[in-house]
Figure 1: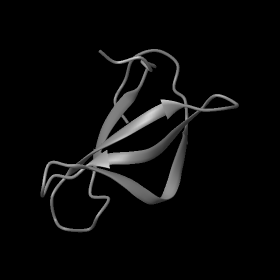
Figure 2 (figure 1 turned 180 degrees about the horizontal axis):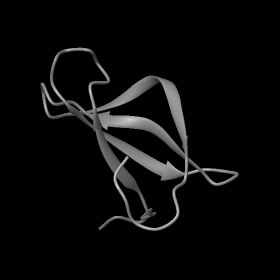
Figure 3 (figure 1 turned 90 degrees about the vertical axis):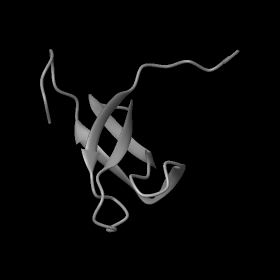
Figure 4 (figure 1 turned 135 degrees about the vertical axis):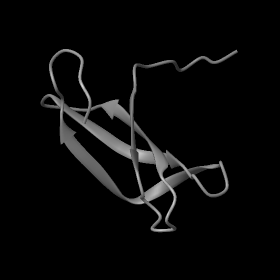
Length: 65
């Protein structure tokens, strides 16, 4: 089984600029931020590492970005 399980958030964006929506995986970072460094490609369905890590403020409660 998995030994490193942490909370994560997801959102949709066209990260690799191929015209398909990609599933961005956000993990908690420092200072109430979430960091996106990996995504699942909408084109090939595989996990890819982003060339530049993204950051966003962590929203309180439930909601949609």
